[in-house]
Amino acid sequence: MDTLVQVLVNGLGKGAVLALLAVGFVVIFKATETVNFAHGSMAIFSGYIAYSVMEHTNWLVGAFVGVLAGGLLGLFIERVFLSNAKGAHSDSLAILTIGLDVVIFTEILRRIGTGTPPFLGEPYDGESVSFLGASVALTYIVALAVALILLGVFFAAFRYTSWGLSMRAQAENKEAAALMGIRSWRVTSSAWFVGGLLAGIAVLFLATNALGGGNGLVSSHTLAFAAFPAAIIGGLTSPGGAVVGGVVVGLTEALAAQYIDRDFAVVAVYLVMLAVLVVRPAGLFGRMEQVRV
Image (cartoon, rainbow, N blue to C red; front, side, top):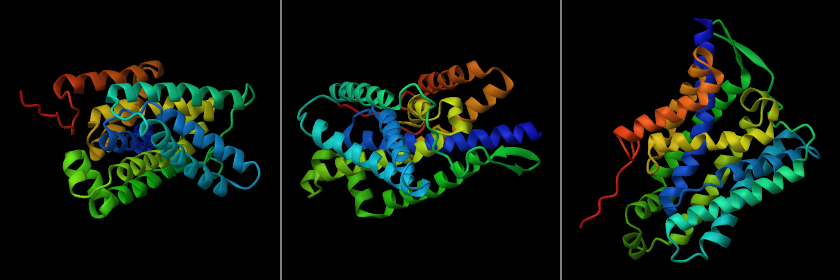
């Protein structure tokens, strides 16, 4: 029973972090209809900036600057690359993000070098607490609490602010939204900025001993891509679905690693994704675009 509690808390904690990343995927896709394959690079870039600042200041200042850097990188990518690729098909833009991912990731790896990879979870990494008789890493508890608060703020903003209304209007019909006076570039820029911020917050938990293992910041790029099946499972057009997808992926991986095999855990996530796509091609909460012929 103690082991099950520990596995469930670990799965929910990691699932919450993946949900932050998956929501970033969804927000960018809803605003631009582009799958952002540079999400992992945005995360590791934020982590590297945070680590560099932490060396000269403290954890809190470094974390703030790193998260802000992630948002600014997202804004930079949208303003410099995507906005100038006018008329490009969404598939071409997705390939463009793959190229950016390779460039950014390679440069960060070169800067990190072959030494001990940095870790970012200084206040909570390595600590554990007793929960329902089980010993749980504090990182998972903090990650779950932070993600719940941030996701609550995000959904409130998405539902009740003019930014959220503009985002939803553009996702429904871009041309009609433009006719109503909604400036498309503001919506798309803000979507990439928010996506970068969420990636920057997530890496503060991904680059820890609990989630990232011995590879620290280096592993955050790979872990960030675990959020991609989460977004697919929930549906690329549904922020709420992204949260559900993150929880499904986190729990699936934790349960499979504990009760079947650690290597099989990664495969299990994709098996769940394939099963969902067979039954619901648009994901659990996504919508298929209807085309009249």
